[in-house]
Amino acid sequence: MIPTREENPHGLYRRYFVTKANGDPDDPDDPEAEYLVLRVDPNESDKNQLRACRAAAMTYAKEIAPHLPGLSADIILRYSGAV
Image (cartoon, rainbow, N blue to C red; front, side, top):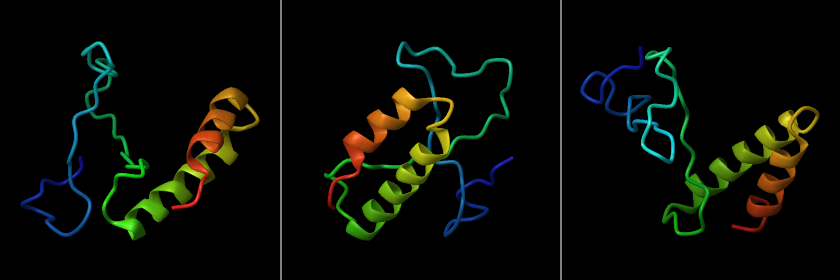
């Protein structure tokens, strides 16, 4: 289980609850599922954080290209621009 903010205030801790767009739980059969949320929009005020998140998104896109080419292409098209 990911620690709480109190347990690990300067590191990894649970910051978000992930749900589907319709409000349903993402994976009701696995309440221990973990997700890493990256903010990639240009309104992120911390440019170092934004560059790191976009680099992570590009790595993900390249890794999924063989089996999810459409998603990979969409991510690269949308987030590969300059920060």
